[in-house]
Image (cartoon, rainbow, N blue to C red; front, top):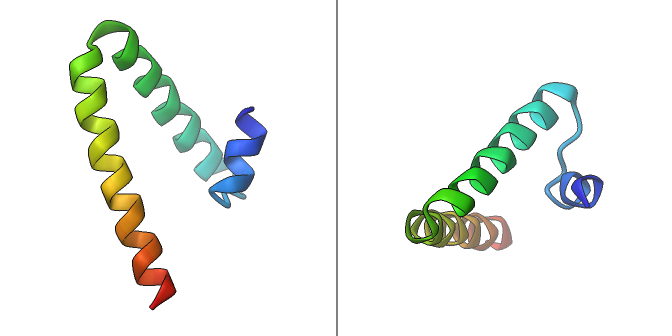
Length: 58
């Protein structure tokens, strides 16, 4: 699953992988400990990702 995500987000080098995995682990911990904050953060991340996709399509 992690490899699929790394490929989907085009994460190639070790430094990017390390940052992504740390971020994913932090999200997982947040989800376990505070579902409301997790939902708020995932909404923000989704909006940022959508904006990036829109920008790339222009």
